[in-house]
Image 1 (spheres, each protein chain N blue to C red):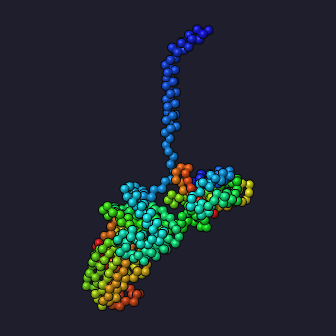
Image 2 (cartoon, one colour; image 1 turned 90 degrees about the vertical axis):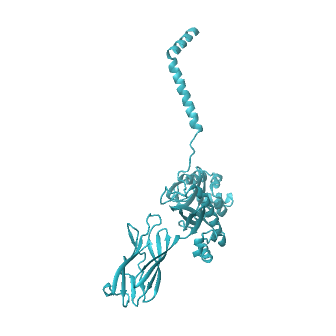
Image 3 (cartoon, rainbow over the protein chains, first blue to last red; image 1 turned 90 degrees about the horizontal axis):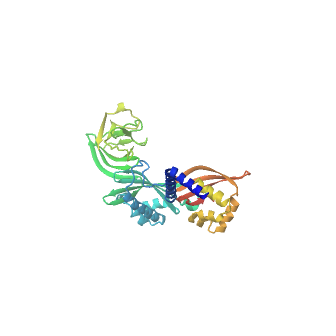
Length: 306
Length: 101
């Protein structure tokens, strides 16, 4: 009986040995792959990650990796100083440009206004253009410690932090102003001299400081409430009117007027201001505010190229 | 994030595993409201039903934090209340919780 069994096994092996070898090999491969999958798992990461240095406006324009550490360190030390009411220390972390137009006293008031209690902050890169990086910072109570107890919804203050790379240095400022530029662009004729002295660039607008000197005994009107297209900023493919409906540009005889003209213009729209256009300059012998254009001694338009 | 809230309310508090629930609270939150484990247990026993249904409002994200409003309804009862939860996910299944007290 044993001999028969052995003969049967030998016969089976001779007939099917290749199939058996292949089956064993497949089984071995399955064991190896199973082992590899078991011990080489892809780590599970949180599904929605926070990317503070990725621009909201353009997700491909991120802040360079080598700057992010310095930026985070600055934010931490600056807002810690603000929380601790170390006004001078925080103030001195800001750029020369910021400090030249904001006193320590005004900065203290700004800090006291926001940091009435201990606050935490969340940074988010908003827009990047050349060597300028704009962050929006939400300053709020430490909701992971309070659970928003007693609050209907999250309350926060948003601060804009502008970072300029100047060579190897980073310069930080807060507030809406990105930078200011001296222009000194002039237009003059026998009636007036108009000088654009400077412009202030903010994220969503540009503010031009204009000085108008009236050389005549007459009143010069460059803008009044009746015409919203009298003063325009030429951006090449588009023009923008003044922001604000109550801008009256009336220069009394032999006097000067200095004012700020604000136009909508986004910092990262890729456009450059070409000129300031005054479309409805009028000269009146006397002006009380309700005169029609027909009563003007002269009417003309002019532009000041940037 | 709903998973973490559900784990906290149903699996931990609902199954009376108060230690696990207490461990998920953020340190600052514990310091402010439940500086002892006993205070938390007393609060949880009074506040949360052992069997409840959860429904969720919109999830709001602020940096690394998530804010979600949760309505907790006791099963076979009219009792229900809404509570805001704040969650910080440090890594998968590694999180901290705070809630409106």
